Length: 287
Figure (tube, rainbow, N blue to C red):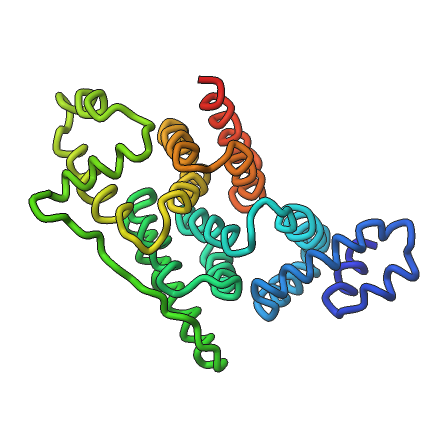
């Protein structure tokens, strides 16, 4: 029955299914909602993806529509643009889901992101999941943009700007200032912890991670921190995750916002990583 339902969804026959299976189609509204959300993201690609699953696992196809996009994606805490930024950050960090990344790069553009805003998310991932993941993400974006251009879609470019170094200041000064805005870690303790092992490491973290990347004006700092939280949740890096949860809260994100990121990540990075992230949030709240 599940297979029949999914096939009917794909063929646009939800009304017929609901009419013939009233009790079994309590989820019909979730089907409709999920399918509508999928159409916003990328109707053509996602329809192909769902169809490809019907023969091998119709139940998985059903759960993608009803749970991932009918239940979770439909939640109202974040707007579509914010959801797509978080998903793009997580999938880029994972580095093993190019088809899904391309789907959500397309979704981010459909949700109102400019090209520059998406580039900022991908560039930021060079800090948290490495340059290879950022390079792969940029190449995936290039492919998506080429296809959209071929389909006659003109996406807004946005503005891409590097960080500025005030006169008399250094990259290190800017990085320290950017870290201080988080109010999440004591710089002296941080430097002391690495002093005997790799003092240069902290300098690079501050100069590249915080000055060159996180100080860029293309995204507001709170959005950057939420994207970082999504990426670190995907990577399962708990200590750094807690630091950035503190930082996001200090920048104006609510505990409900962070909890919502974890709920969203349950679909895209898995329940274990989302559970670990939720427990990290709990620890930060109870500090």
